[in-house]
Length: 471
Ligand code: FAD
Image (cartoon, rainbow, N blue to C red; front, side, top):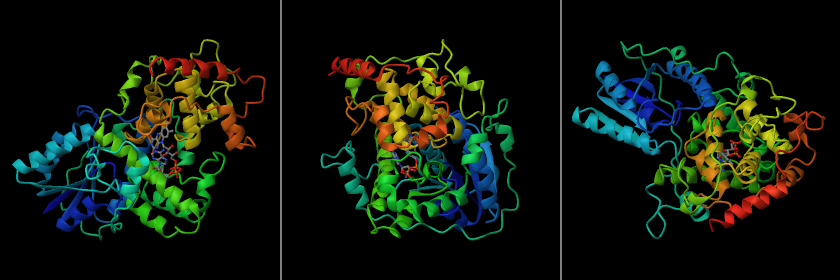
């Protein structure tokens, strides 16, 4: 008897309840569906596609070692999954829950279809420490403030991580599925992914080893180290959590081993809490990526230039270079200058170039570059969110919009709008010897480095005046 584990954002063998359940029921087959068709499902950005390709290669190997074949299919997930169940004659299908609105609709449709056909369909909690509908304020609604949310959630008892399934014999016949190469997830002509490949190894083993490396050292100074972009002071677990190579249960229980030796591990635990809080927001506000959580911001006079998620020609022409250009073309518009790291503001340019090069940016610098785009350039937060969606390997449908809204002031428990990061002051404080800036903007002290795109003081004043207009 064949059982299906339908894998999605949980590309791992350990602590995977759906995979374990499928293996217990008999011969297990793992299915991954690339769904760019179901209504509302957000197509992956280019950096995410790169990650997914390598993640599936790695997952296939890990599953094969357990006797579980991985089958790839493409299409609207509800119909594709049903077709696969019919083809295999499976009597059981299992998956781990997703929390975005359109994804939940797909999963509900599959569950209803399975019930009609007397196929056993069951879902599990695996990607979040809390189920967003189980945690409510005293008033009965979802949380909008982080501290009480995390006080409630962190007091819960999180189950221990599960082992990977034991090795079994694979089913006798399995549909071939599609070829990963035919999905064209990797960039070609030009292939701009060299920086990503240099920085990352997608997959479960690499994720678990990043966790162990972090716990063996940097976690102890995390309370300070997390704000120093030049240092390897953070875990760099975000893409591994995003793709589910590592589960939050694994992180939480591993963290328990190093707690009590200083504030670092507790502060790190709180950041895992922010991830939960972002998903809590998305579950209760499925339009998080497009709608201000605070409607007062609907009237804010932000600029919304065309081409939010598109790569500007100035970047396309340099492909794999670390520094996109040594000077800023005169006709480059402010949005493209921000994307390309050519604003003339060193910390902003360093962050944007780090992002372009390695598909990731340090959190402190994410806040600074986001604040600069929204507040100094007056550009809508959605534009920045779409660029991060396109370029981050950890781009996730909850953390990305929730954090952009946090910086904009339009989100839950957000930074007040009038708190405008000054990139020069931030650089002095968090990159005092300019190690981070020199790494990413080696041209900062050369005559070719562009003049600042805007005057920081004047643009700050404009932003505050605009804010007055909606108060
Ligand atoms: P660590 O400092 O080691 O933190 C550990 C983990 O906690 C992270 O891997 C992440 O899963 C979680 N975490 C930490 N900070 C946050 C936070 N503010 N919000 C939610 N989770 C957090 N994170 C994403 O995972 N995906 C995104 O698309 C994303 N977009 C962002 C956009 C903006 C404008 C900003 C300001 C932040 C964004 N973040 C996003 C949050 C944060 O910057 C990254 O999670 C962090 O930089 C990842 O590096 P790390 O794994 O070394 O983090």
